[in-house]
Length: 152
Image (cartoon, rainbow, N blue to C red; front, top):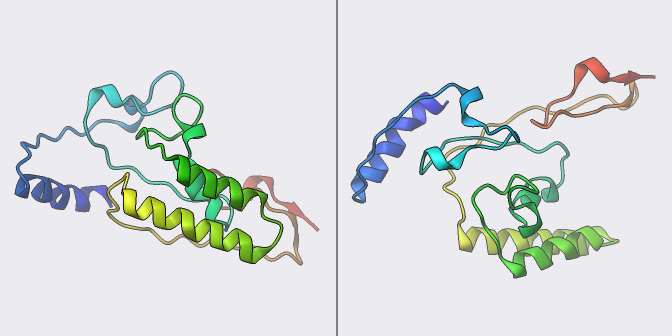
C-alpha cells in the first residue's frame, strides 16, 4: 500500500511548497535498539497500526501523554490534557453510555488537533467462534494469534 501512496503524498507536499526527497529503507533499519522508530533520520514516515481489541480506547490510547516515547509509542509527541482527561474518564466508566461519550469526546479533540495525517485505512477481519475457542490472544497488529489459541 505504501508504494501506491508515496507518489500522492509527495505530490501533496510539493503542492504546498515542500522540497521532497524520498529514501526507501529496510524496515529493520527504521528502529532504534529500544524498538522505536528512529525519527532523527527523517521528517515524515508512512506507517500503520491496528487495534488488538475492538474498543475505541485501544487505538486512541496511543495518543495519550503517558505514552510519549520512551514510555510508549506516541512517537509524534502529541500531548493534550483535555484529551488525556477524556481517555481517563472512558477507562473509569462503569456503563457503556458514559464510556462511549468520553471516547467520542476524545475523538473530537483528536480530530480537531489533527496530530497526524490520515492517509488510508486497511480493514482487517478479526473474528473467532467463542463456542469453539476458550481464549483468543491477539497480536499487536490486531489479528488472531493462531499459534496460541486455546480450544474448548
